[in-house]
Length: 299
Image (cartoon, rainbow, N blue to C red; front, side, top):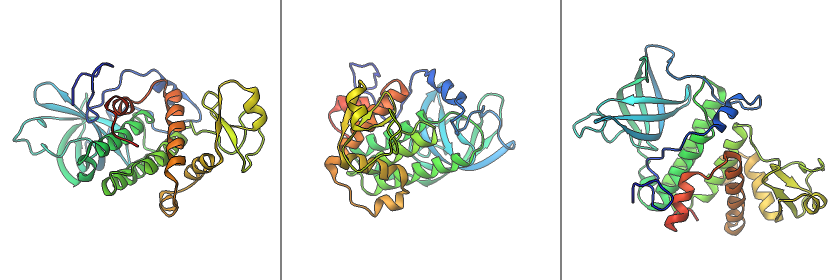
């Protein structure tokens, strides 16, 4: 894969470095947002050990790496892994994206330092094909962009568990990522306070009925037949696609796994969610751009 992140070149989904996004400030300030929003330079104690999922890894200076971690107790934070790029480092091979680790962190004035690292799950199946790599990278980038460095929160554990669940599914079935990814998209949007309205028409407030309605990305939800014809920007929403979206939004992963979902309708549901995410984040996720340019990856 090429390393140039410009639009005319391929990019690696392993090392995602999104540009500065001012919308993150708005997310942190929104009253409806229930995610984490404080500086992570402060740990609960001088030494802190926790389970962590590595969302991102980027080079720093000659031999170090800055890791972005997702933890069940602290939420999302950046840490410094000194010497991690040295071949002889004990951290080498344990600090790659979408690895589950138990990590010791030490307080500092800049970023917490990484001490001991124990590899709990490498999610090897997530690395064995381009499709699996893209799907796993997409899941991590999605979580990164819908969280903000912040405080301890009940939702931190929920978000952590959701991402682990999805990576576990991709690890086991790397050629079938659409269902877990669509479920993650809806649950992450709900956690961040940006869930699409799927119970009532966003135009008139009418309660949803089991019939073909519409969906408005700009308005953030479904439209009844009358509002679909009257409001610009709406698109038809087939009944089967609507049922899938609402079921995934309401359900746990255990409930989703027990139900068979038709791939054509699921693909259309993912297309709608992709458009809605692009509008919400004010830009497409970089992994999705890589997928389109490579012509491979997610179905």
